[in-house]
Image 1 (cartoon, rainbow, N blue to C red):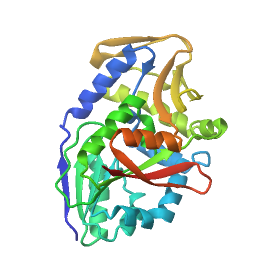
Image 2: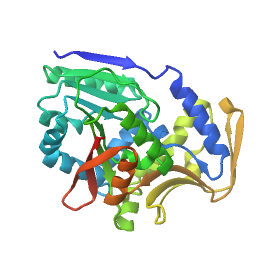
Image 3: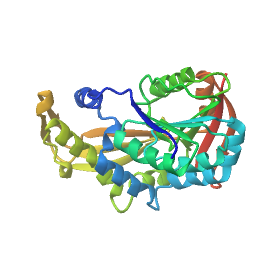
Image 4: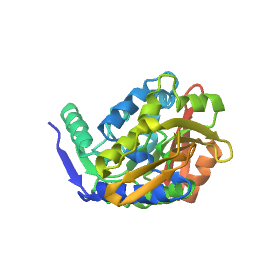
Length: 320
């Protein structure tokens, strides 16, 4: 069996502290917002897995299509001996890269979920003799300290997750990734592309209502963790295309005027009838904008791949 290690650099109480801070700031601001990372407790992760199989939700299939077709080219272009995956989860899609990266020495999956990392990491270590798996419990949106591993290194940030960051947050994130890399190391970035509004809205408001349940799950998380009394049935799921910013917004819209109490924060929040709580921004990209944002962070665009329908892109950029 290959070596498996797990390092926790995220403090044990970091998740609770971050949730409290995000809820307090988001629910007392205007407009009211919550970060999408709080969707993902065990139930939220199950719902998202269900979403990825829905006919309306194309990004996962489109990205997998690219990985299946282009992993060999990615491996050749990067020459990676270390693969670092941010927000790795189950590491399922990454297996295509792992198969192609024949000279790989170490795989570093990074996630906030220790249980997900342990399950996936041990399975990969058992399946792949000779591959070192060093899992890292950390939040990729904060400053990370990576283990010492051989280069060249390839950082993979897949799934279009970068679209959940606002422009200033994206700039800071890409700069932090560049700071982790040595010249010649690379970033493999998944970005969902701008397309017809109807296709986009359907992807975030499916006919079966799975995305609606996923969206409302954030209220269940806050109820459980902070003792709040949100009634998920008192909110409607809404998905809206913002053409100016070229992003989808997921919102929860209060059906009536209501007051929600959050005892752990000593907070009462009054929602007006029809008032929205924004729970996610999912930016969609054009090739030139991706290149510009990478360049601003000190990353030189090297390769660009899309699926056959041009719905989703993977880009490879190299640290200057």
